[in-house]
Length: 171
View 1 (cartoon, rainbow, N blue to C red):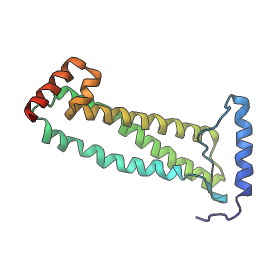
View 2 (view 1 turned 180 degrees about the horizontal axis):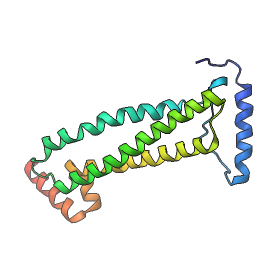
View 3 (view 1 turned 90 degrees about the vertical axis):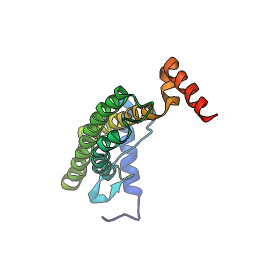
View 4 (view 1 turned 120 degrees about the vertical axis):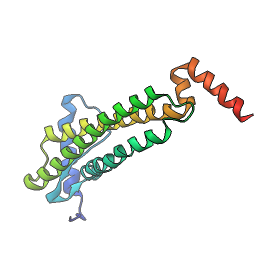
């Protein structure tokens, strides 16, 4: 990939994109993603990040079953929490893989056509943001499996009793 030394053209294109967003109600743009491989404009390299995340999500998901086998018989582990985490992990995996596929499609269209279609870029960004939120949601469910402090934040009665029990064992 070639990296330009003169960024005036990408900067001009960025300003044009921002001008097009203002009539749509966007007053401030927090994240700007421009993909134009022929001019080496991929400001933050997000397309590649999408498919790397998808590739890493697969082995991460596959380690879930052995981890479940290792901890399901430990004291304080609730089977329902494991199942909730497992269900959310599958949703997060699917969204992450779909985001990776869209990222590859964005990269390919940018290379083949000189730019990524707006609808594809928007769909990619939307799927990736929802996927990232789902990963956080999944991680929270996973934390509840072994950390009663997290459970205490959502279920005070059950979590508080476990905290007192754990504190009693530490004394």
